[in-house]
Length: 359
Image (cartoon, rainbow, N blue to C red; front, side, top):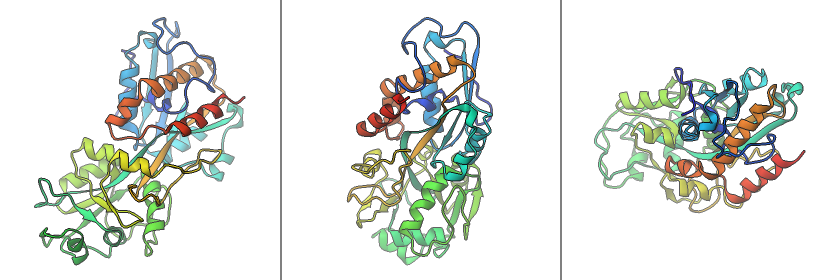
């Protein structure tokens, strides 16, 4: 298996390139499935960014790295959050970045022009869920939260689990007189961007802003999806937002949410995919769906992007990244589905491939 560097929260990102666009656009490419070494000399590729897709990136790399062709290749991914990932990408201190929020105009102005074309491509999609630690709600019971309730939680208006609004959402369930502890991301986070982008549309009283950080009126902060998950697990009465794969990994329940059409929707990849059906994709792929209109759509869904350079100091790096992309679009897709992520829809994937093939 190809060597993988994992330090602290480091995850090998070779995978990050996967749903990105397949066999074109990143330079010429040796067959992904060739057994011949891709390089006689050691090659190191470094990436950094979002924690949202990090579990999938790790899985992708582990599977891709089984090929003998990459025995001299080391790919590392530092899951530091979207904010730090974008900063390192714009400083050209990494070979690729990853973000759950598309680059804004100010970021684009900071792009190092000597690195050729700025490439921003959606890789996969995912759900942001409300995970919780509520004693007494066990077995087949799953917490249901109306818009009124979850908006009240994030604004600090609802501060106890026995609030009548939560009780009304869950007929027949007896809630304890227990303080509600809101847990949010303290680091610059694309997950927070996806979440607050939704709150702005869904919650009339939300005043905390929209972005990779927010002005939370209540609660405590934790670093990364893993940090939020850990805080929820150890704190009775806690509730916070994480991506679905993080909730599954940490065996945390995820609430059923009321969507824009008034339907209560379970957090599943299938329901999340409904949010993206028929949505027009802009040329820069900065597609956001803050409050899906489809009747069966889960309400908090977002894409995650890979940030690449048009030019690399070593041509072989382009080849390696391109091969990662090709593998991900073929062999890597089932892992995304298995882990609760959303593979790119065929029409969006084709647009990505077309854009990458352009000179």
